[in-house]
Length: 450
Length: 74
Image (cartoon, rainbow over all chains, first blue to last red; front, side, top):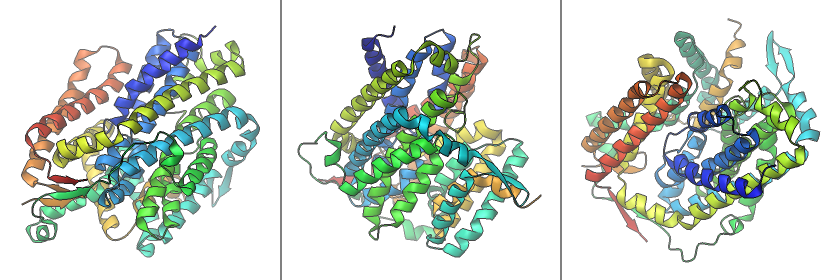
């Protein structure tokens, strides 16, 4: 019998720990959570306890990884990357700590909506997933139906870019660059390309400054002035930090994406829906705040849905989440697959109760702490941490992960992708088009019939 | 004279010093891990973690002698 006090204590400790890990730029959950889950399972810890630990971790982690984004424009993990442009827009308006709290509030809403929904209706919703997973043969290529959702979304992102013609031409061209590099590497690397696109604008400006003639444009005198609006008491009620529209979108999209994440890429969904919502706003600041908040809700929702539906309903890893950070649950460990053990040993209500408890404890704890200290954290970073150190950390991590992906070649491949992304960005192609093309590249390229 | 890169003012010379420290420590952490741990599966995961920690420590060191070029107005 699993004791609720144990679950609460376990969830609280792991949430606190992974809240800190989540805030460190560049830490990735596949690298920091999956190996520990594997170690715990190998050590013979009951899979239900490991699941409770895991859920509390991902909830706290996903909530915390946008903290450095809001404060410094640097993502705390891969999933927070799409929020970078939104946060930079907000920072220029003196809204850094406001956007930070909006993200946290949307995160807790997304977490609760997704958990309750997934636990309650994941079974009945399965036919939708089955339908979208069916592969049709189109122009001689086997294409899963969910591909068309991503493809349509990318086309919309392209035609609403500042430079629609170039953005449309970019889709097949960039897909070829990605698949070409993967061919040379001899493996399907993802993270170094993903980060390469992310630092494209940063590298573009950095290399422009190295050109003496271009440098004039970037020179500034004195210090940069950052406004931070005065706040008195910071309320804990998440609905006080969000407009009705932001809260509504956060809830609705959390529900939809938690189910879609069973087989679709959480990063892809976060980019796609955030960017599309941003385009519905005429005012760029309003658009950035809405996109940032909804992305935060989607991050948590996709991780929860992407773990629980494959684990509790399907029993096999079906998507990037279950085949990534949550994979240890589907491996043969000590002669038993933890996912099967869970369903054979415990009834559904026990599992659902434990999951709900750990998610609530982990989520509410991280939310309360991060919201309470959001302003102090913001002021501390702005006053004490130089941009040079933050950029240094970020670029060093990108170099390291590129090297990890494909050695020295991986570093230059990342540089090539990054410079291409930076140039396209400067010419008015939204980075979302590049991110989505990266996700779809293998299928896109197969249409060339090579 | 500072330049504005990616929405922040930075001094190029200081940026390159910071980048050198973080990169060296990141790769040091990454490359030294296999000699500390024997289990192959854990090495794969932990080498990145130690590499990232190296970069992070490098960032803290850089923060000690580089002054932020920001003025916070409340």
